[in-house]
Every structure is written in structure tokens, then in C-alpha cells.
Image (cartoon, rainbow, N blue to C red):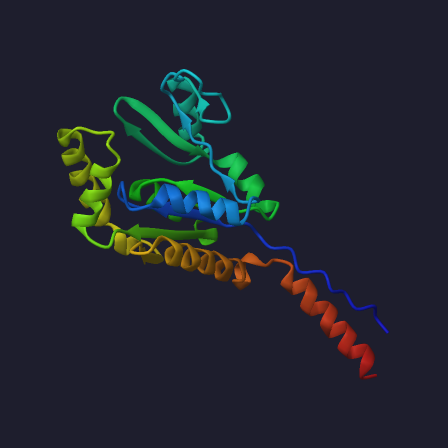
Length: 221
């Protein structure tokens, strides 16, 4: 009889995109998701801006010259990119591809424009996009004010930008209303768990079913 194999079929990693307006709880949920599964890698963005004091190349950002950044974009080596306040930002393709081929999920903290680019890329079929909504605009404003970090003018700008971000909620495959942080965390983990079990994410299933077929044929001879 063929020896039974109980090893779980190897899976392909996910590109997990989390987007939300500022103040909706995305940073906290991101941290909790990585605490739940430390194997989830965070996508380190590339940028043409100068490093700030204490920032480490390769850890905080991949710092690049504008010429090198533009070359990578032209060569298709950036999954997504944007020009923000005079500098370029983007997600290098190579480390993401390497991670998902190893079966590791990669987490992206990007806006709707970056999410669109990744979902339309060659890796789009491996993407899980999740948008976090606040329970209300009033609560969103309260959270921004309670931080005590910004002036009223800055908060007003953040609120306008937040509404622009919210207007793209329907472009995501999953949407969560963060009215209770613990409950939202559990729903987020359930979404990730379910996405990992999609047939597309389990390339080892074909080999496993072939082994089952061979075992069945041997037992029924």
C-alpha cells in the first residue's frame, strides 16, 4: 500500500492590501495581524526622498536615486508607484515575488491608487484587498483630534483626504467597518485565513489529489 502522506500542500503567499482613511485604525490592525502571524512580511517601499534621522536603508525604506527609480519603473520592477510631494514612492517587485513563492504573505499599507496598480499587475490574482471604514465621520474626526499631534488646519486637510480615500471603498474585495477594534481584528484574521485556502493559493493540491488517485487505484485493484 502507498504510504499515507499527511503533509499539508504548500501554499502560495498572498499580497494583502490594507487601505483606509487616516484615523480608521489601520495601523493598529496591521500590528495585530502581524502579532497573530509573525511570518507575514511587511512590504518595504522604495523612495527617492532623503533618509530622515534614524531611518535605515532596507528596513524603513529602500532609498534610491530618481534615475534608478525611474529605470525600475520602466523595466517593470515596481508593482506600484506614485509621485507624492515631490518624491517617488513604490513597491519593488522582486522581494514580493520571492516571498509569495516561498509561501509567505506580504502586507501592503498603501492607498487606493497603489491598490489598483497591484490588483491590475501580473500578481493581481494573488491579491487580497481590504478596506477599513470608520463607523462615522464624527468618530473619524474625534480620533484625529484625540491624537493631539496636528493643528486644526492639518486635521481639516486629513479629513478632506480621508473622504477622497473613502470614496474608493467599492474597489476592494473586502470591506470592514471598524466600530469595535477586537471584533474587526477577528474578522480580518478570518478573511486572511479563508483567502489562504483558496484553490489558487494551494499549488500543491494537484499533486496531493494525484497521490490520492494513485492510492485509490492501488486499493481497488
